[in-house]
Structures are given as C-alpha cells and as structure tokens.
Image (cartoon, rainbow, N blue to C red; front, top):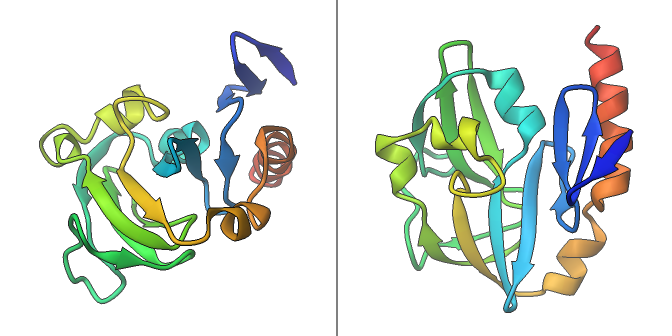
Length: 152
C-alpha cells in the first residue's frame, strides 16, 4: 500500500485519505456537518466507461433535493458500457444537492470520482451513528486489497 499526497494506493486503485467508505464502494466526505457522497475509484474502474447516471431509488422513483434517504438505500443507478450498478447511500438524511452535471457528463465520475464526479450532498440525521458502520481509508484499503485479490 503506497501513500502520499493524501491518497492510499492499492495496485491501480486510488483511495482518498480522510473519507469514509462502504463495502459497496461508495465514499462519504464530511464537510460542515453535511455528507458529500460519491463512488470510489475502485467502483468506477470496475464499471469502466460510464454512459448514464440516474438519481433513482430501488422503486425507480426519482430522487431530488428534499428527498429523504436511508443508509443502505439506493440513491442512483449508474450504467456503463459493461454493466449497470446501483449506488447506495452511506447515511440517512435529506438530499440537499444532486450533481446534475453527471446526467449530461457521466464520465466525470470516471475522471474525478473523489471530486467533480461526486453524486450528491446529504444532510445527515445521525452522522455519528452512520459513520460507525463505515470503514476509514485504511480499513477500506485492506477491503479493496482483498476484493481485488478475489477477482484475479
């Protein structure tokens, strides 16, 4: 595991330090008591070229600003040339912002998964409780190492 410049590297995968991670490869950044959510480098590299992002729940109902989501519930569907994948919320709360740029420019999640390619901003209901269920960067790096090894 190489480190430097605020990132951990596991093989080709980049893991941003200081974020929280899920086992379904979403990340969460806490900023001013808000949760910024996106997909990880591991997720985008395995999906490959993203062609479509839709902000919908498991019932295919649209999600937008003001929608309430639960930790572990679907918040988006992402389509690539390879597969379709669901994205799940790492926290429960109210959606404050949806990154609409992804609808016309889904490859942003490939190019900048930890930056401009974020999915949404959520106002958490109980951030401390939700974070306890997530992995920190080092635990996630170990998880990715195991996942990558199991797919070789």
